Length: 400
Ligand code: TRP
Ligand code: SF4
Image (cartoon, rainbow, N blue to C red; front, side, top):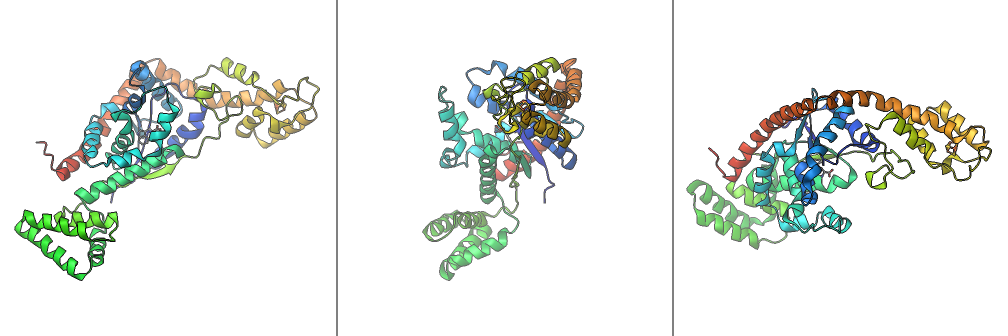
């Protein structure tokens, strides 16, 4: 019914590193050739946790998008935009909030987790509780069918599915709605089913308001109905007849295999990163300073690559022949650690060279980036407006 559309967002955290590249951006650059893609900066989401210090958000947006472009995300293929440039997200978030049970938000696992993790900050705010609903608005407003995210974000995509489903039950219909509804009516038992049908006809043909009140009372009285069936039966009474929002699927992005300089996962909070725009001499310096197998105190001491974080980087940047050379040379102290690190330095520099070049092009004229985002935001807005027309109509919020 809807064409496949990929959408993903990132909070503006500033300059990105190799972990982001291997985890997310390489995936985006692949997807942009396969599907219509929308990639956006979730700047309002950043405010949910940084509301007390928002000064860096603007600069972080530009820095992050320069890195997207540097990594090969192509504005001729994908639509790049900023969440706050498409204010329809906020209107949609508001309208969805009317039908979102508080309990659904409270039980999203990231709510309690993040509050505990960022315990120095008051996150008992309205905005933070609504984080997943804002994300649902981001996704559903483009009727995106695929949402590439890491594992931590799966509950948010699940939540978006539930919101879409609830919206459709309340204000529209699913494709096999008739069939499922007939099945649900049968489950009521023949007497109540007949009564239900009568009341529905009275409401739909004669417009009798009391008929619908009676039907609601009748449904409240029926036991053993699933929530879904109950919503179908409520929806069928009023029957608007259209599936308005698409249920998105998460497209699980495999966790980045990129190890950091200390062998732990590469992450800003571990201070073990190499930035996508790291200067070549800084890359070399960082790799040369990496810890190695502690057994290799002197050049003549043999070592074991399994005990060395540099070996993990060889898994990413070296070929079989090089790895065989490392194994042998490490075990029999045939090579020194600095020698061993050189192919890794070369591999990283080779990977980063085209990124640096593209980044320099955009750094030289930041307006290029602003224009890409302005154009992308216009395109995104057209799509968002289309959905909002249907949403307003379905919810009975006229805007003419
Ligand atoms: N919450 C996501 C994150 O922290 C960012 C995000 C916001 C997002 N809106 C989205 C991701 C919509 C995918 C789709 O990574
Ligand atoms: Fe690590 Fe290479 Fe030194 Fe062995 S030779 S300890 S693998 S850096």
